[in-house]
Every structure is written in structure tokens, then in C-alpha cells.
Amino acid sequence: METQIVSRSHGWLELAKKYIEAGEVVAFHTETVYGLGANALSDEAVLKIFELKGRPADNPLIVHVHREYDISPLIDSEPSYAAALRRAFLPGPLTMVYPSTGKVSKHVSCGLNTLAIRVPSSPTAQEFLKAVDLPIAAPSANLSKHVSPVSARHVYEDFSGKIPLILDGGACSGGIESTVLDCTGEVPQILREGLVTREMISSVAGECVIYHAQKGEKPKSPGMAYKHYSPRCKTAFFNEDRLDEAVSLYNEAEKKGETPCFLCESDVCALLHGFRTLDLGGTGEVMAQRLYDLLRKGEKTATLLIGVEPKEKGGVMAGVLNRMRRAFGVEHGTEES
Ligand code: AMP
Ligand code: MG
Image 1 (cartoon, rainbow, N blue to C red):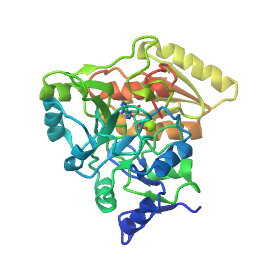
Image 2: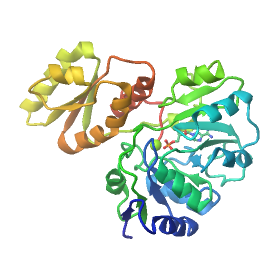
Image 3: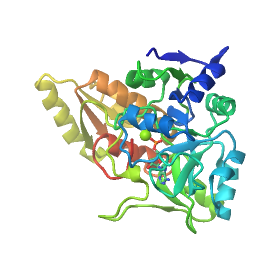
């Protein structure tokens, strides 16, 4: 199968509509990362997504719809805080988990009685969803466990010859996956941190908690059980106060003929003058935008990627840090594919 990359030019929507209606999988740009989308009403189309990604069968998908208005037929009930959050943050990088009406394929939620749903804001995603006029189930458009894609080229690297179409909207402005928020309880609960932060949610809903699976407990977000975002090279991860150790590791690796490289924030890059570095930038927003692109660059150019943990931990950085720790294999047990 030939994989076509098209941007928003003449005939692109007809093409996307044709493939989705035929039960095919189409990759599309969103403001977070690229998605691998299929008709959420079709069992066969949804199962194709799992097969293409090599995604574990118990890791549910997010359904993407064109407008807030399209959410209500798919969900059973909505607490008042969720309605307020929806109005405040949608369209945008917030996925809300609701009790499901069971209208979409049972494979979307992998047997759970809840549904994760979001309204993406990118013009490419918006026009695509409007044209197909169907709920679109879509996880990130990367092979399971690999680094999430933030350009059409990244999607092509993982799925060339396997899907017919990639809707190219350029680089993703957000750069990390949506915040996943459980809206089935009395208080909103963050299952996965992202660009809509706990502080932002609390400011609208009054309160917001971060969910942590207890030891031995099956995580609420099944994807949380999986290692994720891994570059295909050796990795190591250090706090900034252990920079000396990181430098020793780099030097040892180089002596052995390897190609080590640091991935760290701008201030630390400046200290590492003369070493190979990939610069994450200086703010949470910029680090979110650059992280996946640099992880993919790292795996292509280095044999050992040495991550240094950024100093800032709050706000958007909570989501960035969560992805970095998974990518560098520091923490398992809280992510997905
Ligand atoms: P991805 O689209 O690859 O970013 O992954 C979707 C994320 O949403 C994973 O972490 C899933 O576990 C989570 N998710 C999807 N549906 C549900 C649901 N019904 N309940 C809880 N988490 C969900
Ligand atoms: Mg993913």
C-alpha cells in the first residue's frame, strides 16, 4: 500500500472521507500529537488500529469528535464540574472520561463502561472530523511503545506502506498527549497529565486530584501499565545535581567508541559546552513542543541518550516530566501506547 501525505489542499477532505468510510485507518494532525484514526462505530476499523500499532488489547482509545455538541449522544451522564470544564477548555488538549452509552464499538473502551472523548482544536483535525461526520477513535500515531509523532514525517517512519493517508498539518503546537481527566466521580481526577494542568482544572472545577494507582491495583487508565515513549537506543537519566556522573558516563561511552548525547534544558546545555547535546529549551511549553522530536533525533544520531531532569516540576512540566521518565525507563506503570 502506498502512503500518501497530504496537506490541506484541493481534494484532501474527499480523500480522507473515502478512506474512513471504507473502514481504513487515516493519520491526522492534532494540536497534541498525530492521531491514528478510524470510524469509532465500526468494530473492524477499530481493531485495525490495535493491529497496526501492536497496541495491547486492554489499552482503550480516545474518541475524537468535531464539536462539544457531539459528546452528549455518546455519554450517559455528566457532573456539573465537567460541563464547566468542557466549556472552558474544549476544543483543546483535554480528554474527558465519562460513563459510556455504548454507542461506539466495544473495542474502543476495551470492555470498560466508560468512554474517553475529546474535541481537538487543530484546523486539520477540525476540518477532518467535520467532513467525515463520525466519531473517530484515535490513539497516538506511533508503533506501540515508540516515541509519539509530532510531524507527518514521524508518522511516515512508523507506518509507511501500512496506512493509505496522513493528513499533514505541520508540527504539533502542543507536543505531548492530551490531559486525561476522569469525570465519573465527585471530583475530577487526572489520569494522565498534559497541557491542561491541574491548576487550570482546579481554577474552574474548584478542585482536582491526580490519580496514582496503588501498588498491586489495576490502574484506572489501563494504558498506565505500559512502558512508553522509548527511543530506540540505550538511555540513562540523571537529576541535575548528578551531572558529574552523567558526564563520566558520557566520557566512558565515548572511549568505547559509542556516540553518546545529552538531552537537557537550555541552561544545562550551556554548561555542557563541547559535548553533543539536544536542547529542550527553557520553559515547560517549549520542552513539551520539542521533547518527542528530540527523542526521535536522538535515537537516529546517538547510541546512548543521556537525559537530565529539568529543574522546574510544576504546571506543564508535570506532563513533560512524566513523558521523560517513561522515555528513559525511570518509571513504568503509568503510561500507554
Ligand atoms: P493515546 O491515545 O495513545 O494517547 O492513549 C489514550 C490514553 O487514554 C491511554 O492512557 C488510555 O489508557 C486512556 N484511556 C482511554 N480510554 C479510557 C477510559 N475509558 N478510561 C480511562 N482511561 C482511558
Ligand atoms: Mg500513545
